[in-house]
Length: 385
Ligand SMILES: *[C@@H]1O[C@H](CO)[C@@H](O)[C@H](O)[C@H]1NC(C)=O
Ligand SMILES: *[C@@H]1O[C@H](CO)[C@@H](O)[C@H](O)[C@H]1NC(C)=O
Image (cartoon, helix red, strand yellow):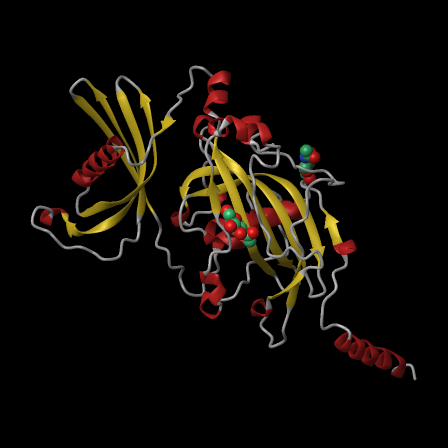
């Protein structure tokens, strides 16, 4: 008898669970506001940003400045879906370098690019699953006017049009200088991705561009007409061209990306370690699926939108712009307040179907606990309102 009762209860639970659960019903009480300085929230925010950077194919690695909002939605499938709003700063590393944001330096204040990301991040500690469901980000360059007001003597390069012939000239001339110094390998231009100009002792143009390996070696350059069809960028070069009267001053430095293919069986180090300057996450470890059996891995989970300097917005626009519209980030997997089920069975090794219930992204209006969290860079010039 002592054994029978629990068995009967079990059977009852399975029976009723099975029949009354074709449509999951959200329990809003399970949507919890979380502190933006909580150590687990900081840890998950760091992992989420790591995965955002890995998902991207272009642009610079974004680093975490602060967590600005956080909600935890407990699920019937074990685990929680975190709704994170992250304030970010652009670093010098290109996303193709596959470097962790923790190993990348953020740009100096006068050339900062900053903004906000929203991310949905599924966390299942017992199964050690951390999974970025979706994200979107919006970034802008720091206000040149405000930089000038706070620091009139700071360098104030103005961003240059990538189609300006001087930009192309700075790129080709600086790459030519690099190739001349290189003993064997030669590189050619893929594209210029950032350019600015500033009067130094004459007009100066500063460029950053992606390069690919040229099939020609140094000894062949004059006779070589080979063309490689694939143009996978292998590195990022920074070059400058300054002119004084008839003299040209050229500088160049290149960083080459590490080979992209991880060694077989090797855990991805970027995803397994917690952020260095943030509290360590104890339990979880990246245990995502192997890319081959997850077709969805190939599809981007979001994008980064680049908007102009806030001061360059048309006057009418900025008048009407509330604090949340300055960095608008849309992330709506569903608009149904009841939520929508998302199949995440591929994250689990078993044959059973597992569904995650996704709610619309919570509005940040009334957050009862401490948010935003402390910032790495507290300057109001690079923190979204
Ligand atoms: C992400 O933002 C873009 C606009 O930048 C938007 O078209 C897209 O729908 C957004 N994604 C989601 C999931 O909301
Ligand atoms: C954030 O948390 C850390 C350690 O948990 C604490 O030392 C720090 O004072 C907190 N910062 C704020 C702004 O609450």
